[in-house]
Image (cartoon, rainbow over all chains, first blue to last red; front, side):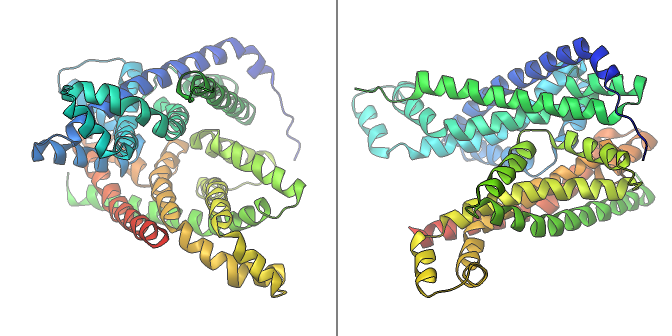
Length: 222
Length: 213
């Protein structure tokens, strides 16, 4: 073997790659917000007294969790125009990431809600709080503490999954790297570098979520 | 969509199953090694395997496939796409299974290890007859959960250029211009494989929770 590693294309492409990192973080952030919204909405429907709604949520969760993200994003990519919705690849990817993450978020959040003692909810209702007030005041924050770690690892997973969005050419790190690669053919150098960039990003996110946890979710120390 | 296209999808499905089988088998052997090294109590081994696991958990599967694919070519191993992808998934599986089984080994009550030691059982005997059988039972739900992940993950081999179920879907979709129908069928095929496994996994989890309560 007489292959010489050449990182020049990577160095030349560094500004684009860092832009791709921002694209990835943007996709991830959008996906996370959408996932939480879908997660909370899904749990409310999942616990509703209407059986049809409950079954619809169960079906949604099972369907998403048992099919590959790649197939989901392709399906959404081709389905949206037919539904009369013309979206660019990047918003489409955010939508797909949000729907995928949302299904997992429903299960995670539901676990947290179920961990709240029934007695506490009954006490809230007995104090004439509205159902929504009970949800917000008695269920949400303690549940958030319980589910935070699982939610964070799901978020990290979602961030890593954004690389699959390159399949519909959304703007993120992998598609930027693919463009540089097709110009320079330095495949190993480029993909090795961005693998490292992904590693740094997921590590930074983990730290960020850790800081958020210690500031907002830890119990007050006496 | 005619019978020929559907048969083409089924041929892709066959390769998906083949890929999962190889990755899971290879991942089981290597993952057991990772788990044992991770719990060995030997500093260097533990740190190395912890880094190995963190690397695979902190980077996208797609990148792992790319790096292995081009990395193998770089060190002079001229493998076809199929073998390169199989190696990539095997490494991926070994890290994740290693971490799952590390947790399961550590979840076996400490008293079991002490008792085995008190009976003067050597490390190999202790692991084989006392710790691992109990760890295996504890690990089953998570292991099956990972198997589902792996099955879904093999779809990424499509992006690297290996023709399995997802790529077969793309090809057929480009031929007959009915992407929704094709990807619905492809999704249904994945679902038919993953869903029973998911149900089995959660049933095992409930049974285990009931047994240890």
